Image (cartoon, rainbow, N blue to C red; front, side, top):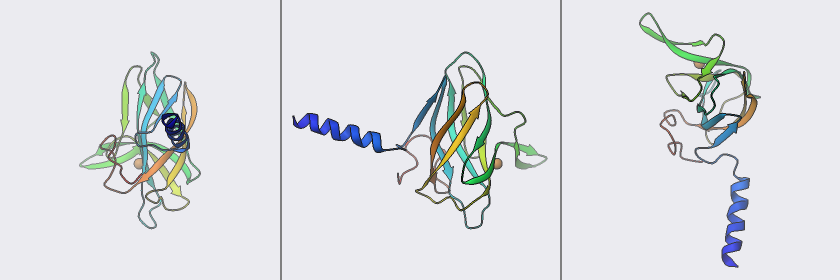
Length: 161
Ligand SMILES: [Cu+2]
C-alpha cells in the first residue's frame, strides 16, 4: 500500500518534470539528448544552443532549421578557421546527421544560434525551441538555460536544475 502510493507520487513527479537533467527527446529515428542554451550577458543579442543528436536509423537526416519565440530568427552554425581566427558561420544546407552516427552540438563547435533575442536568456529558465529536420520533421523541446562556463561537458554538468 505504502509502496504503491510512493510509486504513484514518483510517477506524478516524473510527469510534471519537463526538463530532467539529460533530457531526451525522440523524433522518428532521431534521439536528441541534453539540450541547453547559454545564458546571455546584458544586451547580448545572440546566444548559442547545444544538444547531442543521434540518428539511430539507416537514412541520413539534416537539421535544416530552428526557431524559438525567444529570438527573431535562428541559424545553424559551425566554427571554422578564417585565417588565424576561429569564427562561426552558418552551415549551408543545414547540419547533416549521418545514419547511425551521433553529432554533438557543443560550445566551440556546431550550435544553433538565437539571433536578435527578444530578451536575455536567464540561468535557471528554459526556452522552447522547434527543430526542423529534412526527413523526421519538426520537434519542439525545452532548452534549460545554463550559465556561461557550464554545460557542454555531458550529462549532469548543468547543476541548478
Ligand atoms: Cu553562432
